[in-house]
Image 1 (tube, one colour):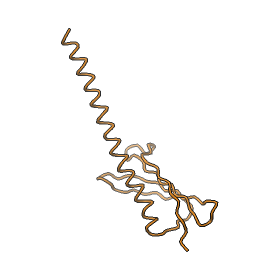
Image 2 (cartoon, rainbow, N blue to C red):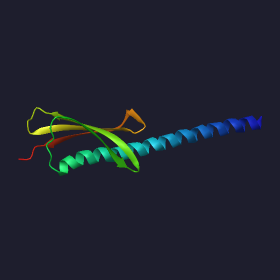
Image 3 (cartoon, rainbow, N blue to C red):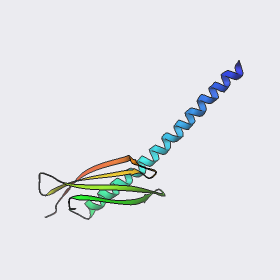
Image 4 (cartoon, rainbow, N blue to C red):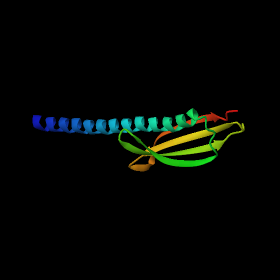
Length: 109
């Protein structure tokens, strides 16, 4: 009886460790994807760029992983502002968005 209880407890601990490992990997991917999104938006801001409306895609290496990103630029009601949305997806599952970052860029006079 004690052996059965110990086996059940060990199975529960093993399952908990596996879930914890998967969660840690997801957190790492989300953090790195956040850096990629911030880099995309930060580069536009640093260059004082006023990008045209449309979609741009690319890939950026962060932490030894190539993250695909997609940036969409939208016109706003104000002609001197652009809304920029950057999405970074999981390299192994392109339908899984890890991070979305939205910013507003002004047109420099």
